[in-house]
Length: 131
Picture 1: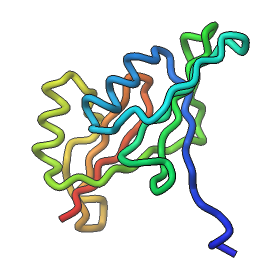
Picture 2 (picture 1 turned 45 degrees about the horizontal axis):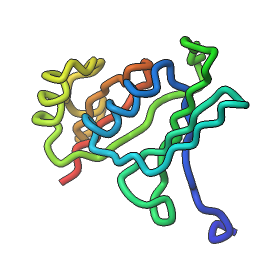
Picture 3 (picture 1 turned 90 degrees about the vertical axis):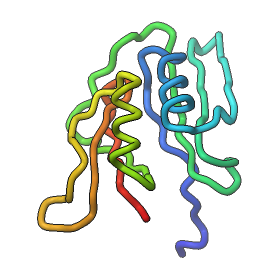
């Protein structure tokens, strides 16, 4: 049954579209893959990711014209990104003004080294060191 499904994207609503696009592209190295502006519906969609949508899961940034703040609720956890050198990555992001909500260190009761950052909207992103 699993071969019938493919994970396509995750959508998050953002407060400031350009600030969010800049965060994911300039700071996290994703590429803007496509953008759809729907004036009649009063929203813009921007898809970002590390590769073409046909082969990679991507992130959909949704900007609604009339909304400048969202409550995230308590159900959402985080996104996770693998990085080669977590300490260098965190220092680069810190220098760019990114909020570091958990410094690099081993996961509780384990050996995997992780850190947490936040995007401009407060979404949590887990960085996992992968060698």
